[in-house]
Length: 231
Image 1 (spheres, rainbow, N blue to C red):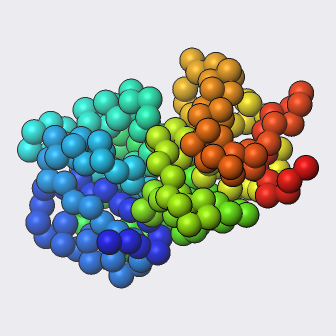
Image 2 (cartoon, rainbow, N blue to C red):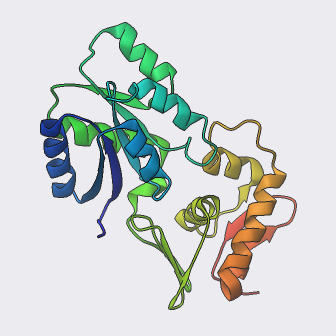
């Protein structure tokens, strides 16, 4: 099952809220994936990388804040945009959520229009390249919603980091990025990551892409760029 916009993981234990959010997301072209507990959400994140997470503050097995803190400590998934769903309207509670790494919050009860507006605002701010449903350059096609990469007519299996790296490059073809710029976009909020990490994953990406690996071009003394021009 695919979507036009992408995938949203909804972590919420109230059936009425789940039904409302699922209907709103499907109507807007998103694919909702539901989890009623933090444990279920953790298992889902081992299989998929959603574009956005809608996270309830109060869950049956642990608080949304604890789940959020674990997510932000996860090297592979800490970049994911998270919007807290909460019945708590006090300023102190909202500040706690933002301090733990939430990108925004929305207080119950909320309207569908407000939810969509906040999701779009978070994506524009944190992951503008995710707004595109399909990215193509030369013989390479990337589908963000299904996490599929095809070279010519052959599917390519990429790890999470290599997938994010390729999506970043394809979002801005023919543009040169320094290693520092790539770190900021592909490994956000991870100051301990060294620039040589970029080189390692670019090498892995090229190898996985086979004959199309030339498209990730090294610009000596600067960084990398994606191009379909052969030299």
